[in-house]
Structures are given as structure tokens and as C-alpha cells.
Amino acid sequence: SAVISQKPSRDICQRGTSLTIQCQVDSQVTMMFWYRQQPGQSLTLIATANQGSEATYESGFVIDKFPISRPNLTFSTLTVSNMSPEDSSIYLCSVLGADSETEAFFGQGTRLTVV
Amino acid sequence: GQNIDQPTEMTATEGAIVQINCTYQTSGFNGLFWYQQHAGEAPTFLSYNVLDGLEEKGRFSSFLSRSKGYSYLLLKELQMKDSASYLCAGALSGNTPLVFGKGTRLSVIA
Image (cartoon, rainbow over all chains, first blue to last red):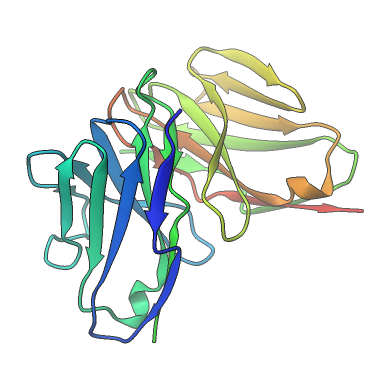
């Protein structure tokens, strides 16, 4: 299994500002994923963070709005830029299990409220 | 494309059995997962089926039929703490992110 430390756990931000969310994994992993979960909804994949290359974004998500860093195999950040109330969500980082490469583990999530 | 369907909400009585269904329309799924998510918390892994049939793990069991694109999660001897959302998710292949259904919110009542 993998243990993921994600922070901050929650934040309240002013519109127009940016917030950077950090995820630290206790082991080296190839893939790290960032999800958004809007209130009452399921998880939507934002992007796949690759070490040594640019992140791969899903349809509807762009790098200017959600820049991602992946400096090494245990760490990644997601920035929510120029925030608006519509960005209020839970943001989750996730990794695949090292052994099976199939099971996904999640950080504790960051509950973001934009006012 | 990928499409995963599951009921939005279910209610069941403490001590009873409940079955949460999940259907998917996609090709190339390499396994079907079930996650539990309590309000305000991250999802936690419950089960993984890659072959057809029933996988039992304590009070929870999961079933998969690949030919029918169908899975279910069976919860026995329901407890109040089982009140949560249950997410069905599929993996296309190793090293790809999971695709999640919208989740089923289960309420266990006395």
C-alpha cells in the first residue's frame, strides 16, 4: 500500500487568488493523478502528473488554470489559479499501487471554498 | 467511450443485506473496483474484481460479469457506520487512472 500526505486539508480563499496543494507519497510511484470532486458528485480526473515531463490534462482542464509540478517520484503539487466560487470542491491526489499497478490510493483531500 | 452507471441513493435497515449495482459500457476494462467514501473523507478501497465471479471479504462481497458489463457490491449485516457513498470504478489497464461512477449514497436506518 501507499501512504499519501496531502495538505492543506482545507482552505477558504478569496476569488482571484491561487492555492497550491501538495501531495507527498511514502514510496516512489510512476503515476500520480489529481481529481476534483464537486459537492455531491463523484471524482473527475483533472490530470496525470508525470515525473520529468508535462502533466497530461483531461478534456475541460487546462494547464493555465491547474498548473501541476512533479519534481520527483514521491511529490506533486496542483495549483488552482485565479479562483472563482465554481472552483469550490474537494481536490484529491491519487497514486496506483506499486505492486499491482491497479489499485488506487488517495490522499486525505483538500476541501477548497472560494468566496 | 466509458460510461459507468449506479443508483444515486439507497436506503436499508440496520442488520439487513443491501446490493448496490453498477453497469458499465466500455471496452478494455481491466478490472472493476469498489470504494467507500464517508462524507468529507477520501475514498477507501473495498474490493477489486478482474475475473468473473464473486469475491468475498468479510461483510462485503463484490461480483463481476464481464460479458454483461455488470458488477454489484453486497453488504451484509448492515451497520450504521456503513452509511456512506459507494463508488464503482473501472481501470482500463495498468498505469491508467480509474474512471469513477457517480457513486451511490447509502443510508442505513435503525
